[in-house]
Image (cartoon, rainbow, N blue to C red; front, side, top):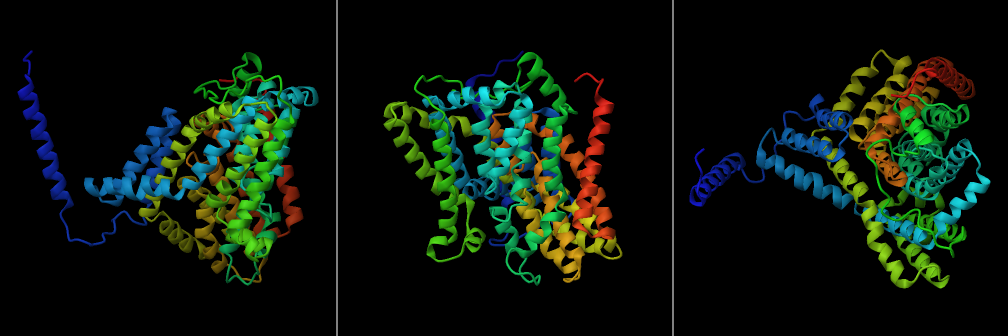
Length: 540
């Protein structure tokens, strides 16, 4: 074989660099300031990047490269295969815009990671685990306790996911509940609970999109709650699965391994870098409870402050005007300072040990921050490609002649859009103005249609690997993200199918109590059938 000397190698590399530079200049040539709209804009191609990313993630079980491929594909489509334009889209419109828009959530994530590390170092988590071992005596009790805590923290989904995971992880670990199951329970009591809580950041967001509908403030949101079948049925589903003591789909293998082998992860193990099991003889349950209470109180105060509550606005208006990316870090920083002072004063940690927890907390949240950055960048690519406009055209074309089936169609469209884009807020922000324009303002179908839109947005968000809430649930439970997505998907689809059937019936019955009764009975019947069919099947 011929050997190349250094001079030859240098010549080849230099030639390749010059050729690449020349090609980039050729592609980049164009009139300055000229705004080009991609021929793929507002077409089905707008949904291809997230579909590719999600498909790759589920096939390869590797989330980082899958998301990046989706981002890169979106950048090329938006620039019509211009490499310079594609790189500009990926860097500026994608990653930089993603980090700028979610920087506040990154801060909140890191601070929460630090607080968790502090509580573990102080022995608060271990003490709570010992207390729970005495008072929570079964796996069912541990799952129900996690569910109840998730329902109680209804102010914001980010806060819900991370707080419930931090508090309940030691408890579910002791009862050999898989991390995938913990992540599912957290996710199932985050967005669905926020979507049926009149006092939450989600209720405030929905109220912003209902102006001009003839309803004042948050009235439309409240009236839509009884028809929000997916959110309500998901809560029933979590309790039913726990009480009936069975699982199906990929979750069955994860739970089997956790119960019989003590393997909480099955695959893609995520280590807790914050020393969750650290023992400290001075630690007490109050060393976990107090920081959590402080975090809850100051996070709520932060949300209200940013929304203008202390400047004279009323409670509901303040929540309508707040910004979670500012309010949550605002409260978390104060909570962190108070927690450090409290734990040092209690002499369960020294000031030096407290400072050592800062990098540990940051390291624990790096995977979540990276996934969140890539997921947000992918959403930005779908925005560049006009995914919202494409869906709006589909809705307009579906409205004619399908009035009685519109609630079910709206539910499906919202599911697909939220799944592909990973955002429920963006989904109902796009669809609510369309829905309110389709229906008669005095008709009960308007309420049902809005409910279908909100339910579909939550469903798609719940299923999507690139959803903020799904990512936060994985982070809060310290579960492998792809494991969480793959085990949760059959559960979410089951509830979604039942919800779709009920929305078909809703166009004809239009009575919330009757429909809810039908929905719950239908869901429980489906679960009993699944349990009977899968009872003799070994997990695979």
